[in-house]
Length: 388
Image (cartoon, rainbow, N blue to C red):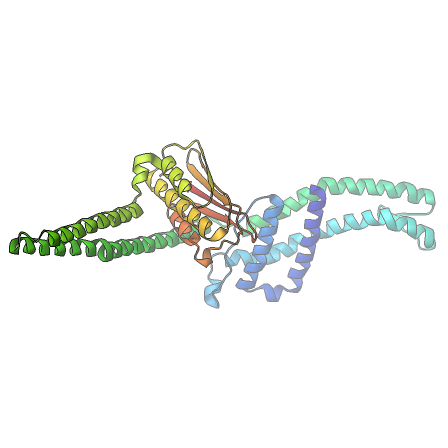
């Protein structure tokens, strides 16, 4: 299977090499070269079973497109691909062509056109049925062995050349890393600012307003007491309202504190907090925790909020009947997998909370993968570093 897969890769490489030569003037532009290079990089990565991230499509034009750090590599791949793919692809084509000739064409040719004798092994004429039926199978065996032994290594060699030319250099990797960290840091700062504004708004519009109302009621009660100490019913109503307002203010204050750092994490740890979250979910949810040890408080907080948000989405949007949360901990990574059997189709752009989960996880240099085909099921996989 690997041999024929390698042969198919080489034949496609021949086609792309010829296409590169024919369309070279059109491809000699950074934006087109980037798309062409990404296609080859993905193809080589699949052959070598090495997942690679494609470079983002170039949106810049003019000088800015030519100034992209990866543009020289994309353009270099054009002649390199033509020089390497055409001869290697021709070798595969020659092998396959001779194999088909020996298997099919030679007997038919000898039977129906003996005046124009075919040749086996390039230069041996077929002059009789004995020659056709002996050298033909021998050529098939030898070419099959050659294809089996050579196609896969040659294809892998070409794929490695592709990755050597198109892979990120150390400077490009560092630049990409800096860009990712800069973007996630900006997202964290934006999220932090939004969180501070939300807390200020909740305290100002909720808790502070209730405390002001309580102070006013107590002031009225004090004046009423000094003016008419016997007005017990009026005083009782004011004090009752003040007491209820105090309890409501305390409840709102606890809610605000819970959004900053849930007290349940400090009291019961991540295991107890996740148990409470899954128990409150409107969809029956199974919780599996494997080898969970002590993790940094920042990781605990993000996992708690992410799982809570994801299960809220499940209950509101997924139409699921069951869900599951699996948490596993290795030496330096915490993995969280959330699944449901709902309708699927979850998308960051639809405002279902996935974007917020992704921002929280990326803030700690983690990763989030969402697999949610239409019709379901949905799987959200989060990986967070624990060696902070």
